[in-house]
Amino acid sequence: MATQLSSNVVISGLAQALIQSQVLTQKEAENFHLQARNTGIPFAEQLLMARKMTSLELALFVSNRFGLPLFDLEAFNFDRASKDHFDAKF
Image (tube, rainbow, N blue to C red):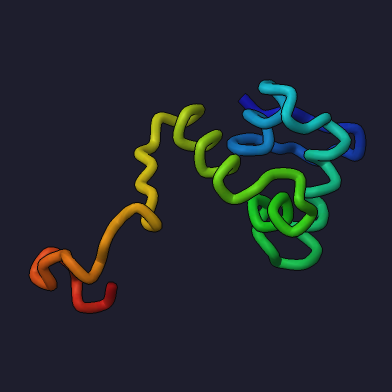
């Protein structure tokens, strides 16, 4: 469900979830949305640049809210992993 904010900006997805969870106010979400649209820098990256959330907090929020898996790459030992398990582009 999308939310229409004060300046006729319609947001949904991550921004809406952050508002519903009271992580962001509607005005903050609107400002980040407009910054993202005006600069071409994604909404999530705007949050991180403004230090509204850490990357870990954002990853955990998205994982919990949207049911997406979270894999901590820092906990993975790439040196001990078999090279056959990864795509060559990785």
